[in-house]
Amino acid sequence: MTAHLAAIATAHAAAPAFGAAILGRAAALAVHSEVDAAGLPAGARRPLTVTYLSAAHRACAAQLLQWMRDDGFDDAAIDAVGNVVGVYRGARVGARRLLTGSHYDTVRDAGRYDGRLGIFVPMACVRELRRQGVRLPFDLEVVGFAEEEGQRYAATFIGSGALVGQFDPAWLDLRDAAGVAMRDALQAAGHDIGAIAALRRDPACYLGFVEVHIEQGPVLASAGLPLGVVTAINGSVRFTGEMLGTACHAGTTPMGHRHDAATGVAELALYVERRAASVPTLVGTVGQMHVPDGSINVVPGRCRFSLDLRAPSDVLRDALLADVLAELARIAERRGLRYTLVETLRASAAPSDPRLQARWERAVAATGVPVLRLPSGAGHDAMKLHETMPQAMLFVRGQNAGISHNPLESSTNNDMQLAVDAFTHLLNELAA
Image 1 (tube, helix red, strand yellow):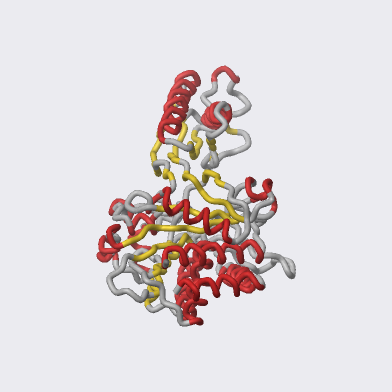
Image 2 (tube, helix red, strand yellow; image 1 turned 60 degrees about the horizontal axis):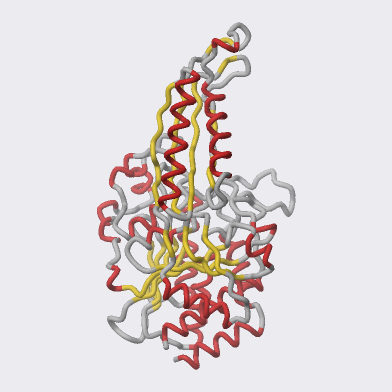
C-alpha cells in the first residue's frame, strides 16, 4: 500500500499534470455564474457569482457530481441541502473514514479557487488511486459543501452545518432579497427537506476532517512559499443591523438638528477600524452600508449595515464585540438615533488538531517545501467540523499578493500540484 502511494507521489512530482488539470476544472466550473456574459469584451473573464440554490449553483453541483463519477468514486450523490458527496471505498470494511472537502458557492464577483480548490485536490487523488487500482485501508469521503459564504440568506455554513447536526429549521423561513424563502428554494431544486436531519455524521466513524484551501491572504506570497500549515481558525461574530434616524430635507435642516442614520453608521465603522487596529491579531469590518430609497437631497433616515469581527481566541473576540456594542449605543444616544442588530453568525475559534496538523507538516516537508505555520483569519467549513471531530487545514499560496473574494484571485499549476502531492503524502501516512 505504502509503495503504491509513494509511486503516485513520485509520478506527481515529475510534471504538474494534476495541477494543470485542477486549473482546467476551475475554469470549467467558473462557466456557471449568475452574471450574464453577454456584452463582455472578447476574451474577458466572466464575473463569477454562485449563491445558494441559484441556477448556477445547481449547475455547479451537477458538474461536480459528474466529475466524481468520472474520477472513479464508488458512491456519488447530491444530498438534501445540496452538498455533493463522493466516497472512494477503502479495503477494510467498517474502518473509520477520512472526511475532506470544501465549498463550491461563492461571494459575489468572486475568484475561482476559494473553496473549490479543496474539492479538486482530493478528487485528483481519487482519480489517480482508481487509475492505479489502489485501495486505502479507510474510506475517503469528499464533500463539495453547498453553502459557506452566507450570500443569499442570513445563514452561513449551511452545508457543513448539516453534517454536524446544526441545520437550524428556522433557516427554512429565511427570505432572500427577492422574497424567496429557503424552504421554497430547496423544494424547487428537488431537495427533500425531511431528510436534512439524517445528514448528521457520527464522529466516531471518522478519522477526522482535513481541508485544502487557498490562503486568501499575503503571508505565503510574502514568504515565497507555496504551502502553509494552519494552526487555528479565528473565531468570528457577524451581525446585520439598521440605524434609524429622521429623513428630512437636506437643504432646510440645520446640521445641529439632524438625526442622520448614515453618518451614525459611518462613525461606527471608523470606531471598528480603530479598535481592531489596536491589537495586531484582531480584524473588524463594516462591509455593507446601504440607505434604502436614499436621495441626494434627503438626510438619511435609515441605514442598513453589516458588522464582522474576528479574533484568534474567543476571549479576544468577545472583548472586541463588547467594546463595539458599547460604542454603538453611545453613538446612537449622542446622535438621537435608534438601531436594531441581529446576530447572524457566531463561530468559535478552531485550533487545529495537533496530530493532524503534524501530519500536514510532515506532508509539506516531504514535498521539499519549508514548513510555515500560520493562523487563518478567514472562516472555513473546517471550523464547523471542528465542533464534532479533529480537523486541520493546508493553505495554498494565492497569486496577486494572495487577494481573494476578488476576480484577481489566482494560483498556479505548480502550487496546486504541490497541494496534491502533500495530500497524497498525508493519505500515505494514514494508510501506513
